[in-house]
Length: 247
Image (cartoon, rainbow, N blue to C red; front, top):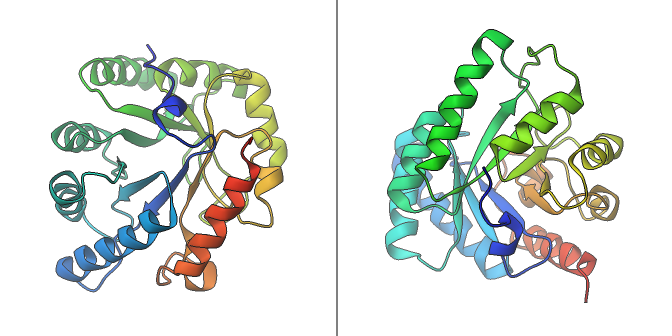
């Protein structure tokens, strides 16, 4: 089951999805930091933000989504609740999020568990308007299916609205050969999101086979996940990606 093409829901040809990692010393600080980051990101022209419990809790995610849905309605957002896919759907539905990011939709479970997961995911998608972006061979996720990459990608293709490809870790460049292999298997039209390690210096080669980008660490001071959001880094990144789009 697929909804209308995920990419068509954005005005720009290469959508930029920017991470909100929810860093801060406590829940109040995390909320304030997230609001400041949204202001920087949206002013610079990113296409969406992803609210993730990377440093924060699920309650922190909900608090930011409440604010986005109620007081910042022009901001397009998605959610990624690490290690709790069920809660991700609940939060997305409650706040009318544009999309959900799941770190794995195929390949991460043994065959004995994968069928039940696939059935559960199909039911969740049927009851939710949000698009689903799903990882296969995603950073930090196990490979337990015993299937080939092609088999897992083709299964994943049926379970989501866009596949996310990454390298081995946060901030590390996604190998261009891996992105190319994913594209060859998925075909030319299925949305492929490069989910880690894209920088202005690598963007042309990183997105040669990719349709969109998820970015987080590069946008911060020191280009690390614990850094403060840097407005100049954001502007430079957005300008670089826009230059890659067809006129």
